[in-house]
Length: 275
Ligand code: C5P
Image (cartoon, rainbow, N blue to C red; front, side, top):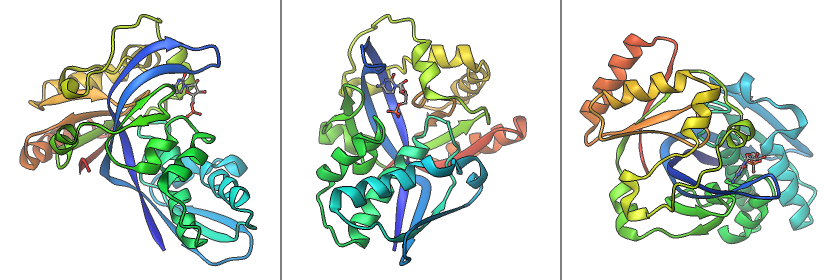
């Protein structure tokens, strides 16, 4: 059994308030790309995980790996021993603003839900996912959805907005600098610049861009490169450092990707399409 784990992109992210529990209230538009990780499950006694793929080494986080934690939390909720052999094929860069750990945890919940014959609805898996990370519920759904609160209070977006987004050619660029989420949120200046209006997502912001750039200045170079490429829109995803550009057609996207690869041989570059 194989489950895809599409990369998560925050098309926009508005920060509204610092909370007392170490989190921030935000408003975000989660979208997903046809690029991502893949998770395979097979029969085994006990719970085992192996990691393959270009970012395997970076992803192996020992016992607290989010895939294993997701599997254990689901097994506990279901009263099962939690027998499975999981193989994670890791293509999403780690600590990159693309939800790597969260989409893997979400894919684990979905695939084991089938493998263990639970057949629980996605809403139930999303509730379990919320205990693993603020953006795991959105990743359980894995399609365009609006997030409020910590990012875990979900609401559907206007179907016209989701239709507008689906199929959009996207270019992802990461300068290969790992950025941890907590310090980026902590570096926010606390100024609320206003709500996110979904229908106006093209004019929206990512309020984590400035704090992330303060911690990893190369993000400004990535954004400037994408902005002058002729893309329809360029922005950072999540807490960075990955930035994305949206294009009207795949030919111009691929041309820009090739140009950037020549200019910045060390940057990670991926072309994809929004789901
Ligand atoms: O929930 P998760 O473990 O993915 O969050 C990682 C960190 O990101 C949190 O510990 C917190 O510092 C920060 N965060 C936040 N506000 C959010 C989401 C995450 O401050 N809405």
